Amino acid sequence: MKYRTILFDLDGTLLDTTPLIVASFLHTFAEYGSLPYGEKEVLEALGEPLLEQMKRFGGEERAEAMVKTYRRHNVAHHDDYVQAFPGVNHVLERLHREGFTLGVVSNKQRVTVEMGLRLCGLEPLMATVVCQGEAERDKPAPDPLRLAMNRVGADAADTLMVGDSRFDLLAAHNAGTASAGVAWSAHGAESLLAYKPDYLLHSMEDLYGIIGLTVVDGEERR
Image 1 (cartoon, rainbow, N blue to C red):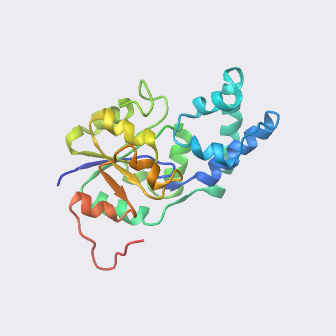
Image 2: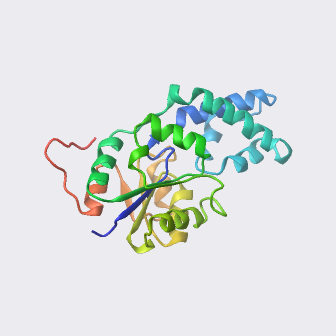
């Protein structure tokens, strides 16, 4: 097998959290004087660390307070919005059965990462989970990927990073791993091609061909 370790971003890659993210940002903007931003600006910033987003939207002096407001809303409404993308559960369950090492590397705080994994039944499949602030630098720096690989004893040469944003693809490049973008990214597939991913997934089942598995009877592309 070419890749034995597969690391995934969470939001926008495994889980459809975009409606929750947009709702939490719009709630925060309203709380801080009806800031003149909307869904378009939120979608453009997806994948960037939350504190950096808030510095841009509300200024450095209010950023930390805005993060707290966002997170309160995000946690309170998490389960009302979040679901796994089509194919995620059955593909990852098969990869786990086949002996691949799976992990999540996210720029999101651990509490909501773990909420999403539990809600969608993915937590038992993950050998490691690296969240915001646990490595010296967050994505697009290579530090979180290197931390995940160190935890499971993986080498960059046999590791694949799968993500929906430039931060994921840049982190993979910086860490020396292969990368795969997902065509269901809220940023659009074309935007990812500029960062030269090694692969582009149009469905989760596309992973099979990359890692040397075949679709079995009863499995369909979704």
